[in-house]
Length: 192
Image 1 (cartoon, rainbow, N blue to C red):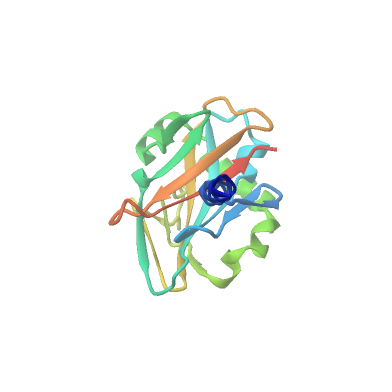
Image 2: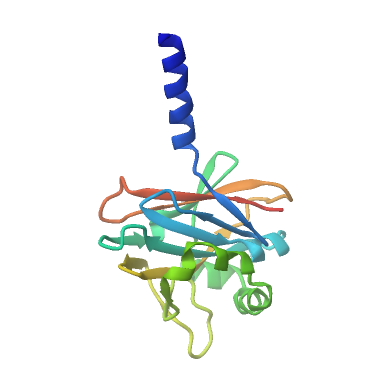
């Protein structure tokens, strides 16, 4: 009987440790299980898999609308094949990559409809701030931190240096609260 209980507890712990990502279709993925709700639109990264820098659109919000969270640029990472990658600086991206405006224009035509069926439909996302604003007039203000409070979420472009993505690969995008690093959330993305 003890062995059966132990096996049951192990199964529960394994299920709880799994990130619980939902594949919403069309390159969209979401996770509602952590304190910070996350959704990722990977459409651009999937369509332009050979680009030296891959674009992901990230949506973040506080699951408990009575709490507030702050995610810094350095608190957003990508894990691919066991290696953790940080986002480049805006300066590095602009010096080494000239495809930002093309990416934004292409993304506006590709934008995945799958996200609408997720939790993001009940939150407001300001488009006035961004980790990687497009370099053109009227662009959002570049920020190093994104805040979430009440029903206001944070939407931003995230770039990661492409480590050699292949069709069918899985990666994980993780975030951590700046004030309380023990508060984390993550989303698994499959490049299909």
